[in-house]
Image 1 (tube, rainbow, N blue to C red):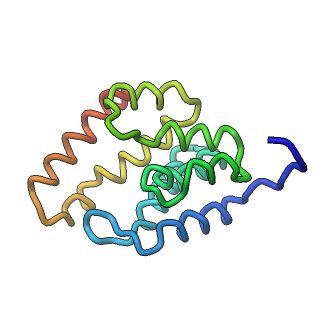
Image 2 (image 1 turned 90 degrees about the horizontal axis):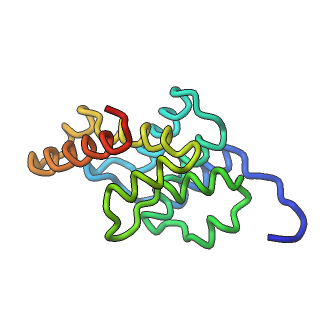
Length: 153
């Protein structure tokens, strides 16, 4: 992109954008989706992630969920690394888990964001809020498999 360089979005601005984009959205347990975004961002910070990774954590589901477009991401005043991490952790329709994991592993900084995402998704207290035992079991298996594909144990 050419033109006058823009001041990069601060973490507070990125958080505000993510919260606004997901406004009214809830997780599978009916909780405000922003709680998940905050938990992932805090998980990245706690694991030693840098500002670019924390920004990506706030935005990690925005393109996948369709609340922000690829074009928005392309044009956003974010570092290329943050954008690359968001793209890496964005699942594509019909994509095999092995391909998804490979892209995460090939993208510097993405594994830490996905690790924090999986940690929150697989949190037993969070899963316990789900009404359906079959859904809990399916999600637990899905997260366990992804952790294995990413070499997270």
